[in-house]
Amino acid sequence: MDFTKFTEQIPKIKNLPLPGRAAHYKMAPEVRIRELEAGTIVRKNPKKAGVMVLFYPNDKYDTQVLLILRRSYEGVHSNQVAFPGGKEEKEDSSILSTALRETFEEVGVKPERVEVIREMSEIYIPPSNFWVHPYVGLYKNPEPFILQQAEVEQLIEVPLMHVMDDSFLTSQTLSTSYAKNIEVPAFHLNGFTVWGATAMMLNEIRELIKQVV
Image (tube, rainbow, N blue to C red):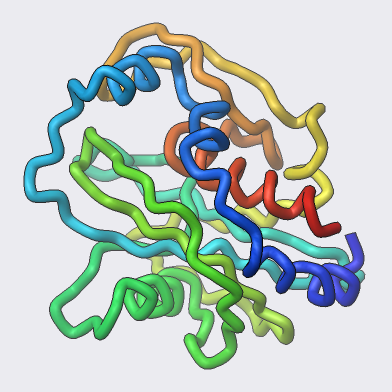
């Protein structure tokens, strides 16, 4: 998808209602949907996090979306695919500031170089007790990414056309932090299985983009 055309169309999502839960549930395992609908998930003073869904051109001026593979560590999100972002800190003036700061720290994208389009629906992640606030941003003139070696294993630069193509939707049997051997809807992108909250957020953005491009 040509990046120039994409930048002309993507601002139109600002005025669209967010699909929210309906889009999230399409990429959530049945057990998680049942828990959410039954109200059995208890939110215990959740922490906040901000993430950035960053769109930018490659050298052929095709639109890409940036994902990262997190390093292995002692935690529930070890070695998972995610958007750049992280936990809110006291010095952050807003959760958007959190998303921009963390994106700079993790992949070296300067906040002033990101054109923020809009906030998406927040999503609660029970295993880590986080409310995650995703934002859509354009990075029109990208510089080489600089990885935060302590946290980021590698970049996953995905063509937007793959995100929009239903043939890249799949499912996989996984053991998660909350259930064993469950069928999980997912995206298969660049050889990686993208599932859980990242897939849910990506699907909401995907459904908005379908309405404007």
